[in-house]
Amino acid sequence: MRKISISLVLLSSLACASVTTVNTIKDVFSKAEVSGNIKYYYIDTDKDSTNLGKSYTSSHANSIGGQLHYQTASLYGFDVKATFMTTNAFLLPNVVDTSIIGRDNAVALGKSPGDIVAQESFSVLGEILLSYKYSGLTAWMGRNVIKTPLINAKEVRMLPSAVQGYHFDYAFKNGAVIGASYLDFFKQRTAYKFTNIIEHALGVNTQAITGSTQGSVVVANMGLNLDTINMNFTNYYASNFMNSFYAEIDYRNSILKESKFGLALQGLSQSSIGNADNNLEQASSITGGKRISTSMVGVKAHLSYHESKLYAAYTYVDSDKNSHDSLILPWDGTPLFTNMITSNNLFQSNYGKALNADSAYIGGTHGSKLAFQQGYNFTGVNGFKSLLAVSNYTNHSFLENQRDLNAVVSYSYDTFSIALKGIFVQNNTTASANGTITQTDHLTQYRVIANYKF
Image (tube, rainbow, N blue to C red; front, side):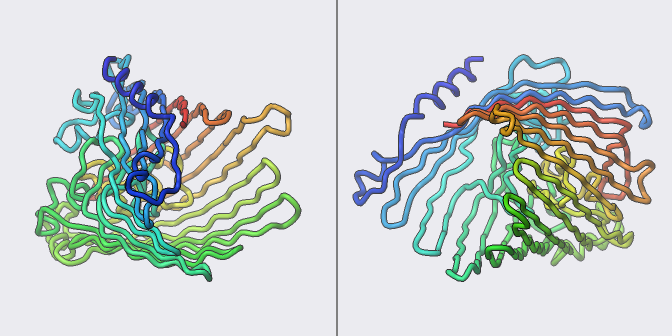
């Protein structure tokens, strides 16, 4: 409890600073901006695995923490940003859901996700970066929280994931954008430590698959952002591991007054490269001689009117039994349009679990999703919203189709928000690196998330 108190005092005591444009070095720090959030998170997860010969389990956890951002004023286009992150568990039961605490800290040590190490509170300097902006040019170097289709912050838990490396992009006046990144370290959202980005994906199998204990990911992107259409193309080159190419085209327009329509297409192609391509081909490899070669396509449409929004999506992951038969998303990317709160790649984004997958990401899976969001300001009581989403995943390898239901009620006022989430999954499906598929009968999860931003 003492650690919680120290963290909250630190987060609160610096909340009064503000940012101002400056022209002298002296004012770079004296006019710095401080912001952040204080978050409370409760999670309860119940699993029925009796069809796997296991018993019903129930786990939960409470945590409080958040982030503190310190950003200097900009001088000649340069500024420095640092972010302190903390998650502090309290009132833990005998069986703990560590997905809001330090799950990855334990997995990286070869321990179980519920080990005592995973239950320990931690703090980390999640961001420390030097940025430069001039006209359409943006560049940064250091640790940063980023959001891309395959490498993402994934903020649905307590803290975001982060990367370390270098980046630049340039936005042209006609809406075109080009950019590139070199990333060599990654911190998963339940980890206190930055790990080499390839090692994080493959763990103890890194040397056997890539021929090295270290590696990097080079990201190149280009896009076009216009009034009614966005096009984005991103290539991820993970040295001696795999190459991933992602494309998305998003069209949106107004139909009538206060009514909007949108339609989007997506595609992803992944293949093993270099040493990984040769090493995975060996019968003794972790995949049993199967290289990485998979792809997916998706389409979504949404229609909104006033405070109502209807969303529908379909995705298909191609099946190739001669290759590793699932998408590989170890850096918290959840690109599928049919992704649900529960289909969050918790298995793949843990240390060394890149070759595992869940439900929507397994080869041969047809995914469909329907969601409806409603705001209630029209009642005169502002700030309330509700979301109901259902999905269905079919695959000839599944014993039963997987069905997900997510229900969310939220309220926000000024800088405070609270959300109540209920998640119900029938036949939760996972697949291992060698193609073995298991299904848990039922998974039920409840979350309470309160967040105050300053």
